[in-house]
Amino acid sequence: MKRQISKLIFLAFVSLFAYSCENEVITILPASSSILTQYSVGVGGINTITVDAQDNIWFGTGGGLLKFDGTNWTNYLDPDYIWREFYIKAIAIDAQGVKWMGTSREISKFDGTNWTAYNPSNSGVLKEYGSCVAIDAEGNKWFGYGWSGGGVTKFDGTIWTTYNMSDGLAGNGVLAIAIDAQEHKWFGTNNGISEFDGTNWTTYNKSDGLADSLVNVIAIDAQGNKWFGTNSGISEFDGTNWTTYNTSNSGLPSNLVSSIAFDAQGNKWIGVYGGVSKFDGTNWTTYLAGASISSIAIDSKGNKWAGSNQFWGGVYELHN
Image (cartoon, rainbow, N blue to C red; front, side, top):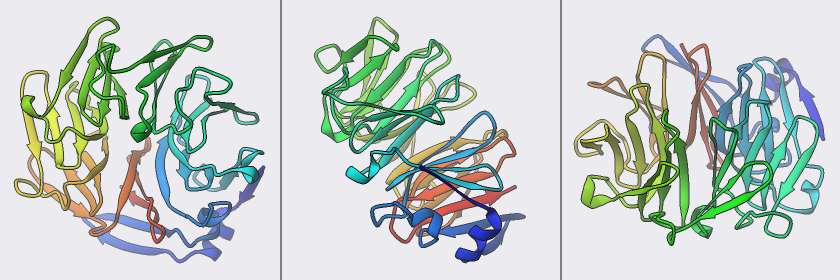
């Protein structure tokens, strides 16, 4: 099912609020807007945001998949949605533009027209709930299942391969996946971090310098530094040294870190349950103080898109 709503019509349904801050403008699109609440199981919140190669913005919501092309909004719904909940937690886009999603009921694949569902009954998917997705340079898809556990699975298009603690994974609750320039896979778990080079596993935990054993998000900057968002702040790892930032030694408004993104100038944009922090390496600036931010993405124009998964939240766009 697909429904197009023009931006002008969309604006007629919502209230827009703009705030000037350091020559930038924040536009708030509330969760009460029709585009965000439609088919949302009563939840207008945004769980994840991804930008594709054409600069379309894709939103995983409490009730399905949304696309914004800069003018029009489109609702995409699995045709089986009416029979079950469809809460999208994670989105990754492959080289062919196919969306791979971790949802509350399955792993879903959407090619723009057709939906394919993968679950434990018809594939090598470990659990029905998918919390994180990443795609490597060879096109393999990697899926983690969050608190439902089980470990992580790799799908090469034919074969499903499972890795868990018996293989070297730090914890079976995988909440975040990132892939570095050397194609090493980094897994954030409920028991620390695992680095997998395809053969060997390396575990990092609080004893190594990580802020917290529970890792919500992993991001890798242009220099190859790894940034780990935890429930106790954010930790940077340059391969040798660890640096932790939290409310006691930085401008973070909260220690509960949910999302991390980097702009073209190397600024770090950090989403927390308390707002958005911009860190330029020296100075911290807070935006949207008090907002519960679940995801941040940056488009090719440098605009920042932040989403809140709270009922009263929605989409926030920070213009350059």
